[in-house]
Amino acid sequence: MLYYFIGIIILFLSFISIFKIEIKKSGLILILICSLLYIISSIRFNIGTDYPYYYLFFESVKPLTFHPNYSFPSNYMEPMFMYTVAILKYLFDSPIFFFSFWSLISITFFWIGIKRESENYILSLFILYCIFYHHYFFNTIRQGVVMGIFIYSLTYIINRQTYKVLFISLLSSLIHSSGLFIFLAYMVSFLSLKSRISYILLLLSSIVIWKSGLGEKFFTFIALQFQDVIPNLYMYVKVFFYDHNLVQISQRLLLIIPLIYFYPKLSEDHKFRKLFSIYFFGTLIYFSFGFFGLFITRINMFFRILEIILIPILYERLKTKNQQILVQFCITIWCFTIMSWLLYKDAYYPFKSIFSIF
Image 1: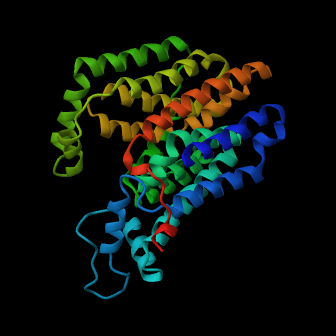
Image 2: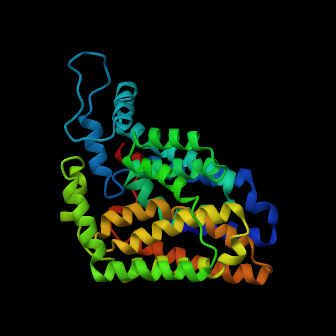
């Protein structure tokens, strides 16, 4: 019930913001909600599918020293992440601080990014909480951190600050390899189409590539060619081979279709045009290589995080309060349905905090 209670609080504030415009961009409310999300993710104990994995990894890391024989555990993780963990182990020697530290890093970058680029802070937080928070703060922590950095870097992507984007991308890739997607997103942001028909044709083509098996053959070929350089790539192809399901497909189509429909009007906004190009690219990747469900979903989710910025742009372009109420209702149903589907695993229930172990 805790998860839904927090969602309802954010939703309540979002509905109030329809009538009290100053709330939607209230810095104080943004800080308060981000603080709440940070506290929940910090005090959890054994919550999330990857919690035991990260717990054991922290326990296996030795406190950082400059001894010549110092070494890390054999299970590889990106160097900046491992060194940071070793420093945390030296300073605190408690997994509580490990989870708290990375939660703080993630929420800080999301907070700055939302404050900079969102047209409705509360709505952005509601979407972040329902669709992304539990998985990327409780499970895939490293990718969650990098996704926060991605949202933080949107200002530099939109303003075409190439060297800053490249630096952020390379630096964040030392936490998780998906950081390289930040610079890829920057390059994709230069591409845009002028008509809805072009986007519809590309979307249909990606579905044809998926269902015909062409995407599967191409990706398998690439994985085989580079299996000595990137061994995990071929592992993903062999182990995580399964097709998308109806729920996953519906989630994406229910948003991409309205965005394409309103594209001619929304594309007048320079920011929307750039971010939609990135988002649409992630959708094409998702459908084209649909047979590699888990691997492709993780790539797609990196670009899908842009929903926390794109949906508020669409929402704020609505002309009347009645339209906003109707769309807010649809967003609520959509978000709570996805959150319920994501939280069905036993790894999230019942919620336990670090205080329960004392």
